[in-house]
Every structure is written in C-alpha cells, then in structure tokens.
Image (tube, rainbow, N blue to C red; front, top):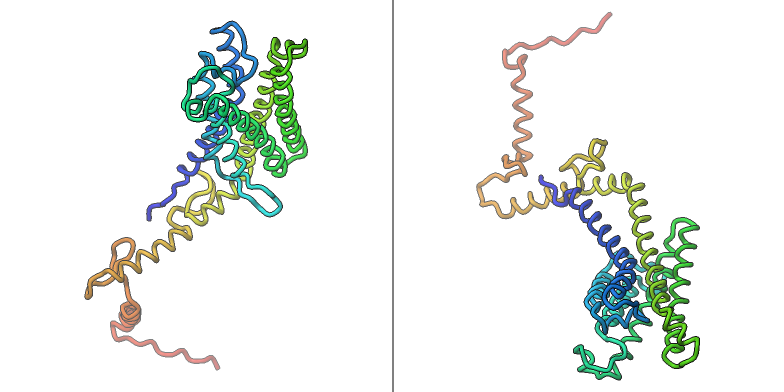
Length: 322
C-alpha cells in the first residue's frame, strides 16, 4: 500500500519553515540598516525615527518590510499554551503582527494627506493609531522573550539571553516614548542633540535587533534539538506511519505501520460492503479473499493428500520395547 505521508515531505516542510523563520529574523536585522543606507544615498542623512522614513522616497522599503514581518507574525503558529503559561503565544504573535501592519498603514504626523488611512481618519487621528501600534509591537516583542522563549529555554545561558533581550526591548520601548517627547516638545540642547544624532532611530533599531537575534537563536537551537533527538522521534513516527526512521538504518518498513494496517482493514470492509453479491471479496492485492470454510477444506485436503494415505499404505504402530 502506498504511504500517504512520505517522510521526505515532512522533512521538506520542516526545512521550508526553518528557512522562513531565518529569513524573517534576517529581515528584522537588515531593515534598519537598509533604511539608513538608503537615506544616506538618497537624501544624504538618516531620518530622526524609523517612522519618518514613510515621508521620504524610502517609503516602499519601510512599508514592505513591516507588512512582510507583520504577516509572518500574524499567521505564525506552533507554540501551544500549556498549564502555567498565562498568555497564549499565538495570541502574542497575532497582536504583534497586526501591530507591525498598523505601524506601516498609519503614518505619524504629516502636513499632507498621502494615504487612505489619513484620508479616512484625518491627520490628527492617524498618528494616534500609529503610536498605539508601535507600543503594542514593542510590548509583544518583549512578552515573547519573557513569557515564551525564556520559559522554554533548554540551558541557563539561553534563558539569560532571552531575559536580557526582553529587558532591552522593554527599555528601548520606554526610551522611544521618552526621547520622542523630549525631541518634539522642546528646543533645548538635549532636544537638538537627540535630533541631530538620530538617538530615537538607533534606540528603535536596538529593540528590533534584540528581538530579531532572539528569534534567529530560537529557530537555530530548536532545529539543532530536533536533529539531535530526531532519530528517536522519527522512529516512533515511522512506527505509526510505516516509514523508515533514517535511510540506511533499521526501522519499520513501508507498509508495516499501524496506520497502513488500519487503512487496509477499512478498505477491506468497504470492498465487502460494496461488492456485488456472488462475488468473492478481494484483498488489498486484488486476490480473492479466502474464507474460513475454504481454509478448513484446504487443510483437510492437505491431510488426505499425503503420500502415505494416497497410496493406501498404512504404517504399523511401533511396538513398545520389552
């Protein structure tokens, strides 16, 4: 019987998902650098904040990167909620994804209407949604490190790394709000220093880098653990699906799994119910199914057709010695 889930497909899906996770982490690391490089090339300077790139020629790069990150986070699944975890990891990922998309679709302060959201909400309301989305994004990124990655860490150094990354994201989120208020609300030397040296921009980038590096580390370590423990788990999986654990190593043969046995029995029952009357039921290989009466008759024939009985000769019972 042909295997329904070949093992090569399962491995390909795992590798494809791993590549997506790595690509997402690299996108988060490279996006601030690409924006800064594009700003220096096109305008000769880096914008004071990441959100300010929306009003420049680098808008497509900013919106495209944020939408890609938000879409992957919103549809990302795989970490289930168990007892003792007070918030669902899938809920954190969904909120973070929607927040990243909100940062892209709701621009910050502007003098002209350039987007649909600005036209629908107005120039005064759209920035409020922008900042709300930014706060939720940083909050969910820190929650991911604190409440998802750190509790599932396999080693002490890994847990400490996630906790430090979550603390960096948490502090940079508060720093963005404080520094932005100082930059926008005053004309003193501190506000000028923050604006001239792009302190808010690099503070935002630091939080994004901390989350992206934590994401990449989590993906790499999970992949390494799966590879290290894969033989035992694949052997158990193969025992059910009838697949070989690893090529060239001992394991269950194709067609010998529990699922294959159940499917064979189910197909036999369906054939028996749907076969016309008078037609002997067929096996999985297309041969007539031997009934218990035929088996008994064959056994009787094998006994009768022995050479000693067929020739009529009978063996005398052995006499006891003495």
